Amino acid sequence: MTLDRAVMLFAGAMVLLSVALTVWVSPYWVWFTVFIGVNLMQSAVTGFCPAAIVFRKLGVKAGHAFS
Image (cartoon, rainbow, N blue to C red; front, side):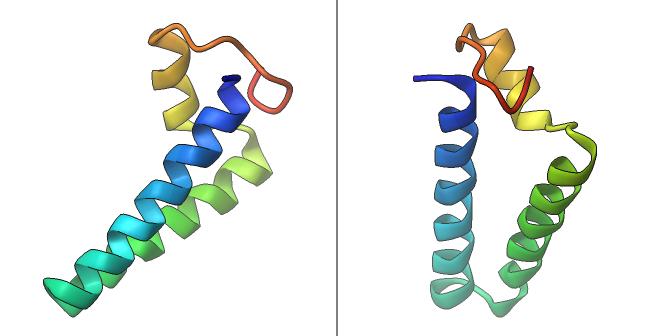
């Protein structure tokens, strides 16, 4: 799995987790969903992605988007 796919998989899992927490725990978890969306937008604009840095340090091979 490349870094690009790992980041997309992680982002998708975090969105689903945040929605589940919003539905079953507290509506305030919607702010976690907002944080994820803002982080995805800023990484698209700036190219800086904290999750990509972590995955790179864990040894995931580079893809094309986060080099």
